[in-house]
Image (cartoon, rainbow, N blue to C red; front, side):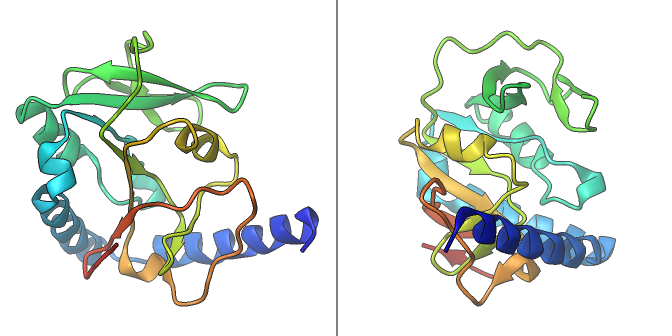
Length: 192
């Protein structure tokens, strides 16, 4: 498959699953968020992690809520790194010490107010934002490649958080630069 065909297929899948996710009701989303949170904190990889890397979820995009997990991690004494998008399609990684450390950037993405890059970024667990996933733990992100570049550079457990409705029963279109995850967690199952 040519890179143009792949891009086109991914774009169609992304559009479909963004629409599916936007149609999830607040009530269903709140229940699902709680179940996902409970599954994550019971994971051995999470319990033993000293450092986690986690994105700040966007409520406007109906993403799985990560703020509860950020707060829980800080209270548990874990080091918490969050990404900041750069214009060169790279991420920098900043340590936060409080749930109140965020403000929205020009895209509406919550980012840390203090954007001093962490001295090192070797998290034990990386929570990855996603639009869709499949049973082989492939993901479709937002299409900019930020995370695929980052995931190639870290060795921690890569975990995708998504609602069951974002899970494709068919294999998602993937290319040579796409990085599969280690686990996917929905409100109904953990795919390992």
